[in-house]
Image 1 (cartoon, rainbow, N blue to C red):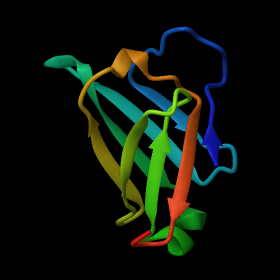
Image 2 (image 1 turned 60 degrees about the vertical axis):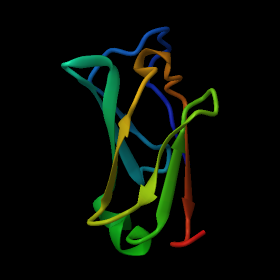
Image 3 (image 1 turned 180 degrees about the vertical axis):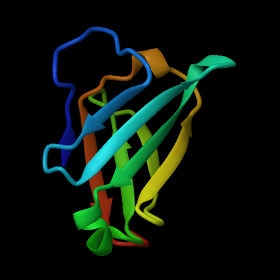
Image 4 (image 1 turned 90 degrees about the vertical axis):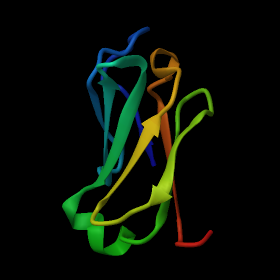
Length: 102
């Protein structure tokens, strides 16, 4: 699946929310107030897909190929801290889902 910004922009404003093309996921990215180069990414599975995706591993990469999040879907979401480079994120996301343990 992929998630793209609705309009082309050279710089992302924070917080930012994206919906994947197939409507399976919502990606929410928030900047940390005390560390502006760091942030938190939360990927939520849309309600109608939760049963089929629960427990699977998800990986989200930006348009430059940088892996931003990798984790298991628990209670319909995955959260990860982005340690650095928040302003360099290319918001054309690629979302890969694997069976648990892959």
